[in-house]
Image (cartoon, rainbow, N blue to C red; front, side):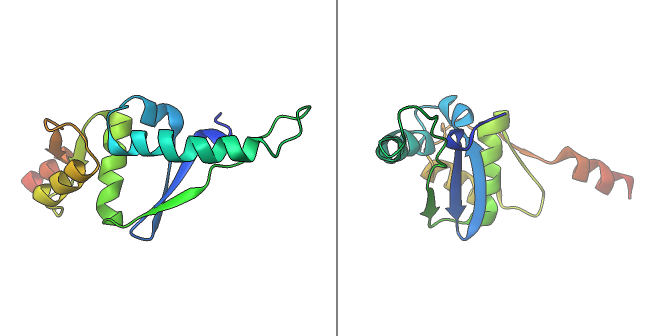
Length: 124
């Protein structure tokens, strides 16, 4: 189980998301990974200074607001977790690719359509 200091809380377009440090660390060249390693590590070190040396300090990391499309960010986080972006037919692939570009995901990021929806539509 992750301690609260290993979990990052992000507010993207007003939607709250959480992701672990280990998940972000898999892709160190992305915007989110660089952002948390630079910005939050400094904040974590400052809060650790407030801990007593004899006790373990498990201070939650601060949250940050990112002014982007909160609904599309769900697909960006899934890329960090699964290595691909799976979107339903109702979501614009172009919009998801713009978000992927903003967050500095690799140019060759794999975007696939949800095959469950395809199979259901074919059956009807």
